[in-house]
Each structure stands twice: as C-alpha cells, then as structure tokens.
Length: 350
Ligand SMILES: Cc1ncc(COP(=O)(O)O)c(C=O)c1O
Image (tube, rainbow, N blue to C red; front, side, top):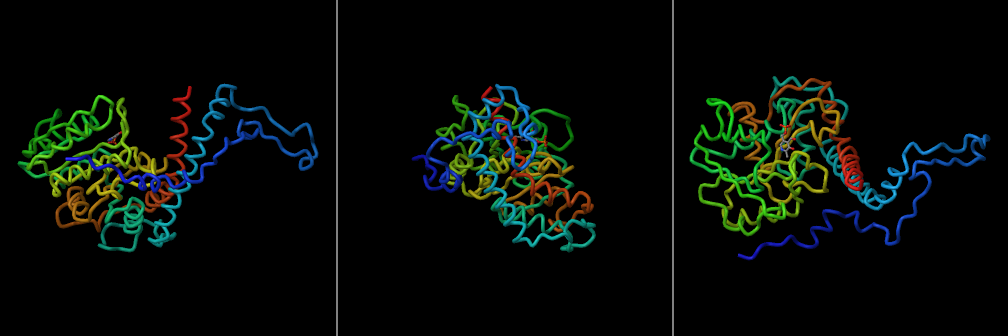
C-alpha cells in the first residue's frame, strides 16, 4: 500500500504566519540586544538615556542569531491566541463562569460547561472534559485507555515505548491487584521507533491486527531522546491505522504538545487526546487538572472512567478560585508555550 502523504497545502495551513516571513534579513535594533535607547528630547536628561545590557555578549549574540526563528514563534503565538480568543467568544465566556460550580446540578450554569466547550473548540474536537479531578497527564491518558479497551483487546503503542508512568497502567510493572490493563485481559504490543527516531512507517502499514482496539501515539518526546512528532506526521499515522481498521481507536498522548503548532491531533482525525493542565494548556498557573478531548462517544466513555457509568460529563465540582485559574491559564497558554519554545531554541544554540 502506498504511504499517504500529508497534503502540501495542509502544511501551509498549519503555519499560516510563514506567509508573512520577511524576505530580507531582519535588522536588529539596539532594544533587541537588550540596550534600550530613549530619545534625549523625551527625557531631558541625556545621562539617563541608556542602560547597559543585562545580557552577557554570548546571550545577546544567541538572541541575534535566533531572531528570525523567534519572529516565527511570535507568529505561532499570535495565531494560537486567536484560536483561544475565538473559542472563548464562541462559548460566550464571561465573569460569571469564574465563580465555579458545585457539581450537584447537572448542566448547571457554572464555568465547567463553558470551559469544556471552549477547549473542544480550540482543539477542533467534538467534545472535551477539562477537570480539576483529573490528577495529571497519566490519569487523563489512563481514563482514555480504559474507555477504548476491553478484555481480549490489544493496545498498540505506535511510537515506541510510551512515557514510563504508563507502564503501571498497561501492567508492564507495578503493584498486583491495582487493576492494570493486563489484569483486565488487555494485551500490549509496541512498535519500535525507526532508527531515525521517528515513526516506522513501513511497519505501521501492516501493524494493526483485528484485536487491536486502540493505537496509542505519543506526540512529544517526553524526557527521552526521540523525535517529537508533528501534527502532519500524526495525521499520516491516523490515515494508515484507519485504512487497516476504521474501528481502531487512535489515542494521542498530547502532553507537552498543546499550542506547539496551530492545530491539535483531534483536528486531524484522532479519536481521543489527553493531557495535563500542569503542562502547556495550564499556562503555568493552573494549580491542577487534566483534559480529555475527541469524538463525543469516546470522551463520554472516558468521563465514565473518571466518574462512573451513568454520571457522564455533566458533573464534578470545581471551586471558583480554581475555575478562574483554569480559564486564565488556558488564555495565557499560547504565550507561555511560545516562551518555552524560545528558551529551548536558545539552549540548543549554545
Ligand atoms: C509525553 C508525556 N506523556 C505523559 C506524561 C505524564 O504526565 P504526568 O506527569 O502529568 O502524569 C508526561 C510527563 O512529563 C509526558 O512528558
């Protein structure tokens, strides 16, 4: 079978700001180098017109070299801030949503539903749950795995070994009788990464077996020395998996992936995607929480793992203090992610 290639136009769509990249080299001003110069006429005191750069020459030089890349990241941030603002506007987010919700009433007017709605809009999914009761990324991913897998089924990790906290969920190690997937009769297989650190496309072409109920794709490298997958690569993997079995649920571990591009895996066909608010989408201020987004039927099933079958997505209390920080963190997230990417590039350039 021929490998489906990402549509060339889609790449441009993912990075629309590229179109605005200047064709000639950007000229660095003094303020970019950390030497702010203020017009004498506006200060009346020529002696206080400038201050020394707070940066050592090596850092200033690294910033100069990286300026074109920083400009591209600024474009990414602006595009993603727009995504968030549009979603907040569509969900009609207002100050009344910051007061929290008790969890007693179903479909109550608190921020819970508005936050779910806005989040689903941002990530291009049918539904989402964003909950303070999701302890972490591992907890969110585990709820999604238990939603997609049933006894006799198989979990296939497509991008090599998953993040190590998932080993106990899968049953590769850990305490007996804690209810790992293995204890519930779910088998596990791993597709090793290609020698180039990316997905093994040839192996993936025939990897899905009839019993493979769920394919797990870890987007970010986590803390290992592998490649981080682009959303275009994830889309290509989803097409390959669905071509073999359209019913195989594709779950993306999106931890540390949010807002690194302008689209998320749920917008390109992932059935489920899970992550933590203590990472990117919490904008550094969310004090707790996680999310699960994707096709409605699978998000509902994952919500039933968080709570109980029958309770659904329409419950769960969140105090006003926390609710406001979840909204505020999501608003700040694109900016914070942009700064982190810049920091990472600066370290690499050293
Ligand atoms: C790629 C990836 N997946 C999953 C996790 C687990 O998230 P948590 O530590 O919030 O449980 C991490 C944590 O860093 C991660 O990097």
